[in-house]
Image (tube, rainbow, N blue to C red; front, side, top):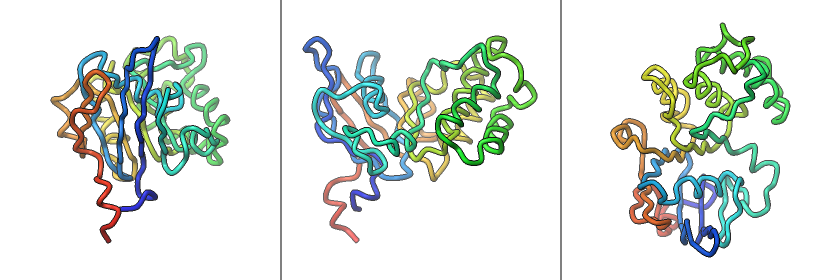
Length: 227
């Protein structure tokens, strides 16, 4: 396996706050198409690790590449390669579902925006309510809209933080079908739903006080030498 077949690679990724290391020397080698469950107790560093990979927080030290793009250089192609789904939907409530996705379609300069927006709104069950202000929608529908937004630009890597939050069983099934079990999409998802990990994950990374204490998702360096 070569570096070009790795979707996410980190070396010594570290983040400190007020001198405290909340993520410490994280080394990952996640292959393309892997679906990784990021687990650990509250405060283990899961959200901070995802935030660094999503370019929302800068590492204190270490380096990383996502879909072959250097995290430290922030090329435009890097942001297009990443989809981000948080446990807080963060939708624009004054806009309709349709307007929310149209806005982000313009930001990502999606060429088939009209078709793609309709496709995703239908997929998450919001097409018939597409013109209603997001403010009148339930928490679960906000999360569905956030899922559609995260997938809108067809990212290579989806970074998700507690993506099941606010979803009913039907919504969780949509999450699985549209994101967590899609073979062509690499996923790293922090989750407390350990009862569901086996249903979608191909590997697991466990954090404890910022360090990786278990990793069944990364490929070993020696794999590069194999045909």
